[in-house]
Image (cartoon, rainbow, N blue to C red; front, side, top):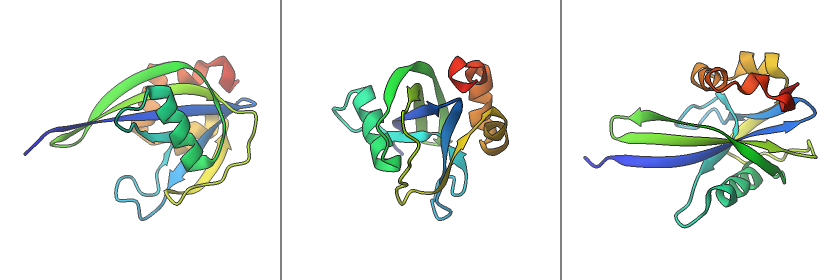
Length: 138
């Protein structure tokens, strides 16, 4: 078996103290029904920020400003598949979201709601990297 490393980018998109999270479609084979930040895989030849802006546009039709890198993490998704996720702080002047078919729902969530909806692994990354104490989420 061949080992694979996948690089994904995520955006903690904030507007007026709330972060945008999206719910994966129920029929998604990986994490169906779970909540997450917007983002996806980098394509060969793309730079990181271009890939993130493309993914955000494809998934929620928002134009955002990338502010800074927040953290990077990695985990094994399968015995031969490792995922690296680079998470950025992004801001949006708009709240109108148009979801792609990959997602079934979205919400602009305050910190308390993020803590209720996000999966434990994402919450652990947020806690470890002090995301809930960001000025943009207050």
